[in-house]
Each structure stands twice: as structure tokens, then as C-alpha cells.
Image (cartoon, rainbow over all chains, first blue to last red; front, side, top):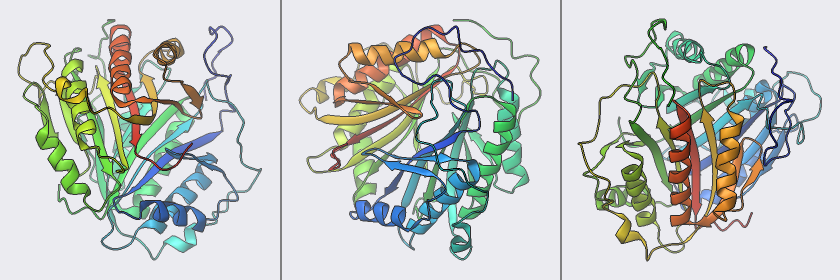
Length: 208
Length: 208
């Protein structure tokens, strides 16, 4: 991964001075379109096995920090675990890696790559509508890596369509989480700082 | 605004070849955490005066295209118009400008700068919790413009706090929309392509 020199930057109104480039995080919000939204969110958070990540919830969103494997293991378990038939459930989130304004605090414990939640999910798949946008930062030629990530969606059968500002995809929940993880992994190898935003929607009654 | 030469780009899996650099758009989703979410969304969309923008709603989000003034005029009217006391309402959105993969289609009619919705809103203000992230694309030195936008939040009394991956702000709904519009206007002058993501939350029972 290319290294950057941030030593000449002016003082910024934040304290971070660059995190470990392998430090990955996700910030996301679950929106159950249901009067019982609070209970649905907290119960699904409590059900995941999150010992391999750092997790913190505030009034707007939840933060996961760790490696990509465990972040997606926990995020997919959280979303898929919250879904029930006939429930309209949306997740808005981002995965970020290499932010030069970030810092190493709020890190997970050292760990291995064994997923702790995946086995619970394989029998609970359902269709999702989704959209995503990838932002490779600090580089002039950022379109080729975006194109690579869209082509990966084609290869995985997710029917990507580029509409204004986002790429729409459709597919089974587990496959879409696998795609987002694979996409982030590809970009992490090529770009020193990127953010991948995504919206997932399950149980919507709207066709298109 | 600096111009870029996109003529040497490889073929991408989308049809756009660069939009007019003044063409601005927003894509957003309203999440009323309420069993009547669909009615709340559609009724508030129907109430705004949207003749100065292009507007299109699909299963995941709504697209507004036009100039920044009218996009924020309509977006603030949509969100503020959907709010009622004791209703927990979240908006997840982005404002994008200058995407080289975008195209000029779905444009608004030629128009003036007079806002059509603002006068309806001034008596309906309420507190918001919000977060935002700014992505200036295609430039190596992207941190100074992010710092400028955070300092603007300080100057406007929105108490910005940089947490992992986002900046948290708090304030009255109208002031926060004014801030987002002012921030986008500053960045539009300095960067040829940027995306500003934001989350707004009203009526939450969670304190922090």
C-alpha cells in the first residue's frame, strides 16, 4: 500500500494523526421501520458474538472496529439476525480504512481470523435491495478502482446498475455481505484511504 | 474550479462521461421509525413545492437534481415537514457535485434562485442530532477542505466533535440544513468532485 507523508499538514480540529493502515472500521445505523425499532436494534446487537471487535453504540450509530473479516461477520449477523418475515429493515453504513485523521484508539484485542457468527446465518438468507458508493481518497485516478468493484458485482451475479451517485445491486443477504467484504478487501490492497458507503433494504413492499 | 481531462480513461461499466460541473444532486432516504413509515414519506414528498428540481423516488431512495439552493430548500422542507412531536425520524443522504462518471440527464428546468419552500418552515424548528462526512475526490490534499468545513460548524455554533469516520454536530433543524448547504457551497468552489454524506435524527429518546 502506498505510504503518505502527513507530517506537513496544518493543525486540524481533531486529535487523530493517522491510524495503523490495517485498522478498519464500520459505522452504521439500523432502521427497522417499526414502532418497536429500539428493541429490535438492541436485541440483535446483544445476540452477536462481538468479542473479536471493538463495538460502541451512540444515539446515531454503532461503531465496529477490527479487521474486515470480523467486522463483516458481526455486521451481517447483526442485520440478518434482526430480520423477520414481513419486517421492513434498512441498514445504512460505511466501512472505512486508512483515514489519516483517525487514530488507533478503540481497537479490538489481538485475534485470529476465525469467524464467530457465520455458522448461525447460513439458514437465514433472504433477498436484499442495496446500493453502494466507493470513495477512494487522496488519489487522482480513482475511477479505475471504482470500476473494478462494480465489475466484481457483475461477476458475483448481483446485477449492478449505475444510477446517479450510487450503484444499485440486488441479491441474497449473505451474498451481498460477502460482496461488500470482498470489495473492501480489494480496495484496501490498492488505496491507502477509502470509504465504502452502503444501504441495505429487506422486506420492502416497493418493487423497483 | 480546476478542470480535469477524462478523455484518456479506460471504458467503465457505466454510461456517464462527466456532467456539467454545476450540476448538483442529492440522494437520500427518510426513515420514520414508525409503522406508518410509507405514508409519512409519501405525504411529505407530496407537500413540497418541487418545480425547480428534478425528483425521482425508487425503492431505496429519492433523487433530487438541481442547484444547491433548491436542493436544500426541498430537502429541508421534506424532512422538517415530515416531523411531528414524539416522532423519531432519521434522514440519511448525500450531496454530490462534479462526478466524472455522472451525466447531464435528469436535469431540472432552467430557473432562478428564489426558494419556494423556505417560508413554510420558519415556524417549525426543532433540535437535531447529526453526523456528516465529506469526501473531496481526485485530489491528494483533501484534509484542509475537510478542516474548513468542520471549522464552519464551530463558527455556526453546532458544537462539532470528530469521532471515528464522521463529525457529530447538534443544533436546530433549520440551522443544520443551512450549515450543510453552506458547507457544500464552499467545497463546490474549491473541489471539482465531492460527496458530502449526512445523517439527521430528530425525536430520538437516546441522550448521547
